[in-house]
Image (cartoon, rainbow over all chains, first blue to last red; front, top):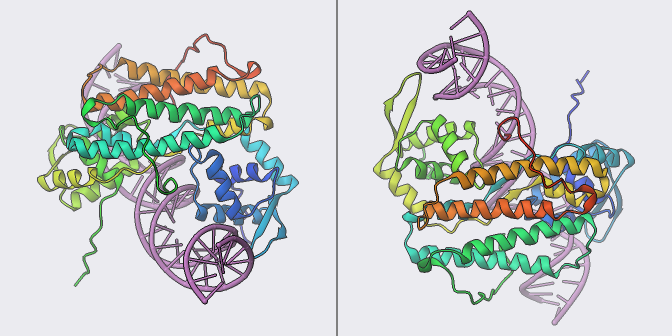
Amino acid sequence: MAREKRVEINATAASLLGFLQNEPMSGWDLTARVREIIGDFWNVTKSQIYKELKVLAERGYVVEKESGPRDKHVFGVTPSGRAAFRAWIKNRPDIPNMRLPIVLTVFFGDALPPEDMRSILEQHRAHHEERLRVYRSFPAQEGTWPYEALRMGILFQEAVLKWIDGMPEGVRPQMKTIVQKGRSRR
Amino acid sequence: MAREKRVEINATAASLLGFLQNEPMSGWDLTARVREIIGDFWNVTKSQIYKELKVLAERGYVVEKESGPRDKHVFGVTPSGRAAFRAWIKNRPDIPNMRLPIVLTVFFGDALPPEDMRSILEQHRAHHEERLRVYRSFPAQEGTWPYEALRMGILFQEAVLKWIDGMPEGVRPQMKTIVQKGRSRR
DNA sequence: TGGTACATGTAACATGTTACATGATTAG
DNA sequence: CTAATCATGTAACATGTTACATGTACCA
């Protein structure tokens, strides 16, 4: 007789339930969607999403809705999934958990030749400028909650740019925007 | 004949080397130090630090310097550890990896009664205000790299406070600073 | 003499990442 | 026909977290 261990779903899984509420999606779609919309503040990886989707399906919180072309499996939230999400979102959110290696690099800046530092800052500046551009390109639906989340994105990217632009002379990247060849990294 | 697999040290271990460069420290000291100075941008846990210290010692990057009272083991960086750190810090730092669950909560704000949201924002506001206070209490050693890192801390906390203070009427916490009983969480 | 801060560490568990494997569909 | 993109998923590995266990030293 297997012991049924009552486990809570984790934050990643819970957030997926949230994203599936209005539009059923596949793992692939979810990965793209979450990253695009809130990826800067809610880091996720494809592998983890597929894992959690499996767990959610086992618990009956999501079900396969339809199958698209290729092997696309589209999941939608069940009533119990909806309930689980609403219960989860009521919890006090954890305080931020961040890793900004660039800040560490700056903290240990003495260990780096100025030209290396400038190059690093330049690349990061381009990244954050690109993120800001993306955020600004979203339609500003003021008065909605997603807009409030977006506002944080804008404020954060602006803060980073302000930070880099306030760096000491020798290492500060030039104001001229760096033109990017490809898409932003990851 | 065991195959010697050449493994790089990871970012956490590398950062510890950095912190040990000027002052030998124990795992306990490191935990406190890293959190205090750069914990908001470089999340670490005690357990992980003890693990990595062990790895660093095995590789000869750190050695036990002295033993203090109790079971205190103080580690200092060896010349090869110094070299490893300098090599590591030259790498282009990864882009930010962040989890700000509060932003997710706001994104899904529709699922939450306004009074719950206000309470959550209030608590987070207090946290970030406290962090800002701590940063401002550090001596401002302008012109040094650690100061530049600190500047990011200040800019970030200010951005979050500005974000929360710009929330819609119904959920916005009152301007009056919330007096905290204990220390900030974790 | 009792509480708090200091101090180390492990075990069990959970989460996250990277690389790999496989194949379908679409646009040119 | 070919490259790019869409799409799923796993295996192996790495990292991170929580709870627990143990004990010391200091201070009031």
